[in-house]
Amino acid sequence: MARIALMLFFALTSLKGIAGDGIFDLELIVIDPGHGGRDPGCVNRWGGVEKEINLAVALYLKGAIEREGIYRAVMTRQSDQTLSLGERARIANRYPPDKTLFISLHCNSSPNGEGRGIETYVFDLEATDRLAQQVAERENALEVIDPLRFILNDLRHRSAALYSEMAARLIQRALVSRLKAGDRRIRRAPFKILADVKMPAVLVEMGFLSDKVEQRKLRSKRYQRAIAEAIYEGIKRFDRELSAAHKGVARSSR
Ligand SMILES: [Zn+2]
Image (cartoon, rainbow, N blue to C red):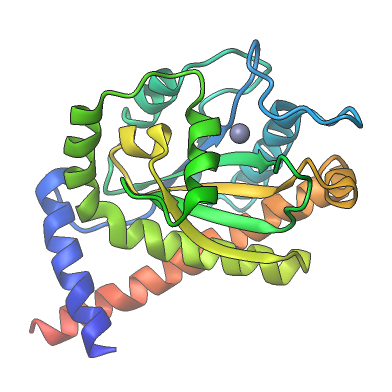
């Protein structure tokens, strides 16, 4: 616990550096439904379309957040709209990085149809493995990446990284336990959208559209609502754990 408090202390002071004022205090969630408009994302042979599922879950998540009124919620797109990754990042970056959590929602797919389960990503220039690299390449597909900017963003990201990881861990855990879904754990990959936003950020691959059983669930309203509720539960745990850590840091630095 002392080690965690110490690590958080460094993260808090470095985030203070980029954010300008104060420690991280969650007030707003920017929800990013992946793809949209001309970009459908994954489309499977049973009629499942990724952009529609991402938007449906995002709307449920926004609803869940607003119902309780603890945090505010903003969406990068509210309809079937074409939006570049740069535009999504610009929307998110209007909000203070020390008060905002960014969540991008996506559906997975594997070429051989064997993948199943949920994975949550945080940004890293180096992917966890070849599979993670392929997921990032697919999600980056329509965009050109400037390697130098990527590296600069990576440096900036180190200060938000601890928060991103904490959020990813708690959201992934809530999803897996609530949905009884396969746990593909937290993974890392160079996602452009995660690189371009200034705040702690995660990308959730909510399940595989290439799996016959999983895609049926992903397309049902009940399961979409359950995903949203699980993510919201993860967000609240993230906030609680953060508050507890802040108190610990305050005590130990007294
Ligand atoms: Zn996607």
